[in-house]
Length: 123
Image (cartoon, rainbow, N blue to C red; front, side, top):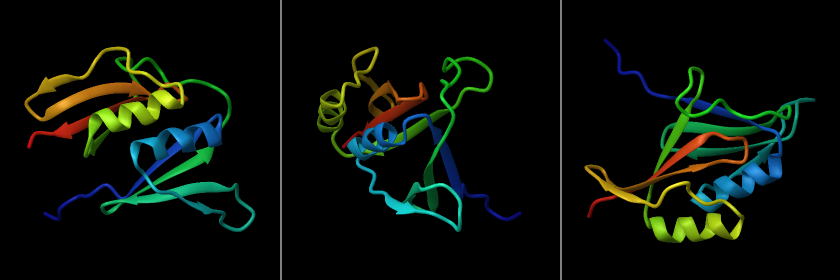
């Protein structure tokens, strides 16, 4: 059986610029795109996966433990630096970082209410 990989992740954002700033603070580098007469959006490559941020209608993601909710996770180099960059934009985790079997981790909420796990791997 063929290996399955994740090829595309599309996030809809009620405030495109605010979401773009949030994900840039995590360390992602985006390129502006527009396909034909479609909306301007932003794209980046994460390994073999393309992540795109598109404009969306105002709203909020379901509470992270509710059906239909999605959590996104990123492995990052230095958690404290990333948290500082996010706090400079006005984003703070609900709880302080904790050590786990996978490293030091924390969950923050993006501008549209999605849970985003940040994990600094053990050295």
